Length: 447
Image (cartoon, rainbow, N blue to C red; front, side, top):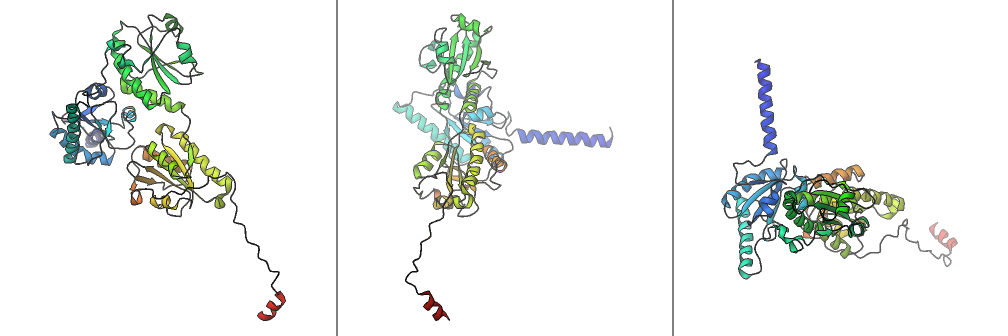
């Protein structure tokens, strides 16, 4: 082998090693359990254990710094609390299912596995262990007092037909299908099954558990249903059902399409949420006219995007509308994130501007606010589609730099009249009555 070839081989080996290092923060030798869409339901949702799960991205610096602490905590908690990790950059559907918007995000899966809690503690191994034991202690006390009925594992039996386990799966028949599905404005995922089918029996608990979560996340706008194709043969024939289970997606005004995703609860939920987002209208863009508008919008969304636009006298109606149009386009582009969108005029809410570090200059300005954490990030680039898109894209993958809101809150919000859509008007000048002034005498005095 030539020296040059040897160097190339060595370089290739080093490059491969570096690539693997960046893309794998945990290994099978760690006590951290690596979780994926394939094993998440089995390991976590159907488990009788308390779980701490980190959602991370391999390129994330904060995640890399957390890794040794997470491993230490996993070893200390071994046999007491399960500690897992999800590469949410690789498995975005799993991260999206649990509302992961930044990295690292840590969730606690306790008594109700379908409602994970955010871990709010420190990032050292000691703090993580303390947080896990505190969650475990609360769970045990609830059980002791009778408030908790044990872990909600998400396991459903095929014997639950018609019972609480399948309460959110809508059973359809030849007689009820058209009225419920084809005449509906909602999106429907319909499973065609046979009672004797083994694959259908395996899918049933995943489908039932997903139905409940989808109903909650989409506010009933996406529905999961089931058709016994051995009984309802008119439907089976109409839609060409040849194997079981077959899942089809129905949307108003469109031909049904086959669902070709995974069969786990997380896969089903992720697809349903995507369908909901694709069909949802863009969020409202609201002017901050009082405290309730700001509070309700920011409390109801993980992020609220607030723009401070120039005074109407500086832009006129046409200029302001052009800024609002840019915001509306970005709200539509990022509607899957389900953020809130607000705007105000420069000077109308001075305390809000000061709390976000805008402070009376540099309009138009934009801030992305996390009201729960009382942190915000400022748009540094141009107030344009490209500039705002880059700003929001960085935030959506956890790369944006944030700062605490000044004084820990928004302070006073003024109640104002909403913009009427018109150009601004300068204040009327007072007419000065000069009828009693002898201008000739005044001129003589001046001379």
